Length: 421
Image (cartoon, rainbow, N blue to C red; front, side, top):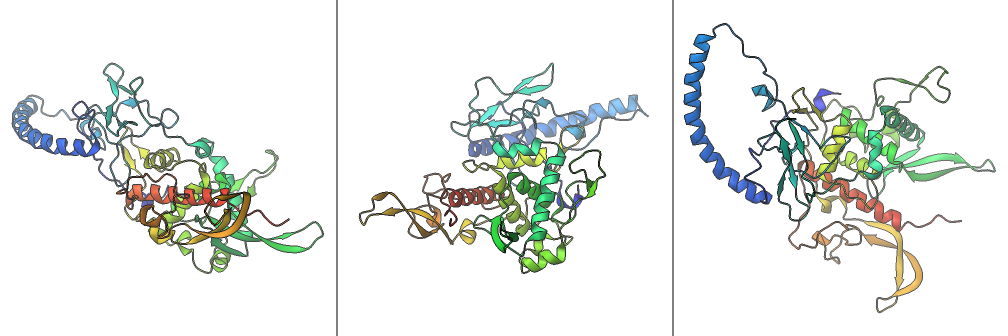
C-alpha cells in the first residue's frame, strides 16, 4: 500500500455516550462543548493531585520503566479498543463519524455510537466489562448498511485482481475512450461479425467486478498503471500450467485514445486528487446495485474491507483514505442531457399507453423543482425537504458524488434505447 495515499489524522471522539443518548448530533455537539469546559476545570485539579502522587511513586520506584505506550488516543495510555459487533464480516450499521475522513466516533468505553434510524439520535452500544465487548442493543432501531453486489470486495484478492486484468485488456484494445453520462469508461472497440466483416462497437465497462477493481487500484495507488496486487503473474485455466504475465496499462496508447483527457489516471507521482476522486466515485457507482444508495458508512466500511483503512495493534485507525481534496457540486457535473426512452404523452399530459419515444432528457434544468433543478426521476434519493442540500466536501461529498453517478447510471439503464435489430 502506497503510504502517500493515506494520511493519519487524530480521531475526533465523543467522550461518553450515557449523556448523549437520545440527542441529535447538533445537540450532542452543543452539550459536549459545555461539558468539556466543566471537565477542563475538574481535570486541572485532578492533574495537580496526580502529579503529586506520581512524584511520590517515581521516588519509590526509581529505575522502573513505564510500559504499554502505543499509537492513537487510547493506545497512548496503554489501553486497547474493545471488540465490537461491528466488524468487516459482521454487523455493519450507520454510526456517528468525524466529517472529513469518516473515522467512527467513540464513547468513553471505546464503543462506536450508533445512529437511530428513527430520528438520527445517538444510541449507545452495550459494553460488557468482563469481556470488553461492545454489542448492539437488542431491538435497537439502527440502519444496516447493505452492500448488495459490492459484497464482491469480500472475495479473495484474486477475484478483483482478475477483474482488473480484464478491464485493462479492454482498455488496451479500445480505439477511443470517453465517459458515459455517469462517468463510466466508454470504450470504442474493434470486432468482427459472423461474415468476417470488421466493425466497431461502443460499450461502457459495466461489470461490477471490473469497476470495483478499478476503484480499488485507483484509491490504493492513485493511478491505473501496473497490476492490482503484488504478483505480476497469474494462473489462467489449468492450475498446473505455467503462469502468464498479467496485462498492464499501455500508457502511450491510453493517452492517445483518451485525447489526453484522463491523464490523472496515470502515475504522476501525486497523491489522490479531485479528478481521481471523481473517477473513483463513478467506478464505485458502477459496481453498486442500481436501486441502492451509496452513503458515507458504505464507503468507509468498504475501504476498510479493501485494506485502505487499517488499525494498529490497539484497534486505533492509523491509515485511511484522506478525503481532504474532495469537493463536489452536482450542478457542475450533471447540467447536461441524456438520450433515452420516455413515455409518449398526449397534449394534456397523459401517457399514450404502451407508447415510448426517443428524446433528450435534462438531468438538471430550471423546469424541475428539485435541488437547483435536479430531475426528480433521476435523483430519487433526494429528500423532499426544500432546504436540503447535497454534501459537497470530504468523504460526504465523495459519497454524494458516487450516489449521484449511480442514480444517473440507473436512470439511463432503465430508459435505455434498445439497439437496432
